[in-house]
Length: 140
Image (tube, rainbow, N blue to C red; front, side, top):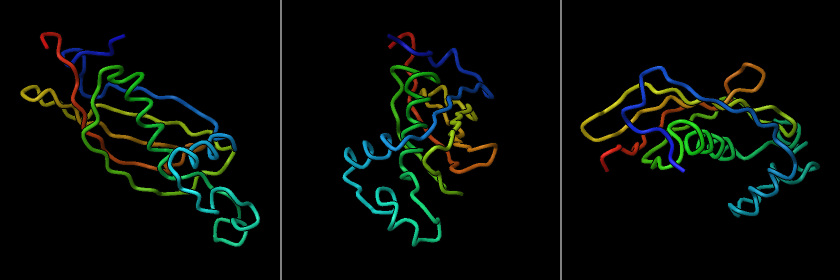
């Protein structure tokens, strides 16, 4: 299975997915990451915080970004080099998170693509940032 090759990318190209955050997603992410912060897992504790209830791990949104890049744009074969993330708002269990990546720059000499990365809930940005990836070439 091969995603897009470098020569198939263009500035402005975009891909997105929407995923509703479920309790099982947050619990599975806690198990995999070993981040058992009670703000994610304990409703009674989370109600005492400024959020007033459980929120998803911020890095779960980062994983959604990775999923869009690894599955759609550029797709299978892409190699993650870097990612900046700014957490703007909390993501709550039950929120539909729309994750979008957009090609903003292409470095043909190195085969690198720069991508704007955004996660939104109901049209409001919850996470934004920028990723740099290596995109496979046809001749490689």
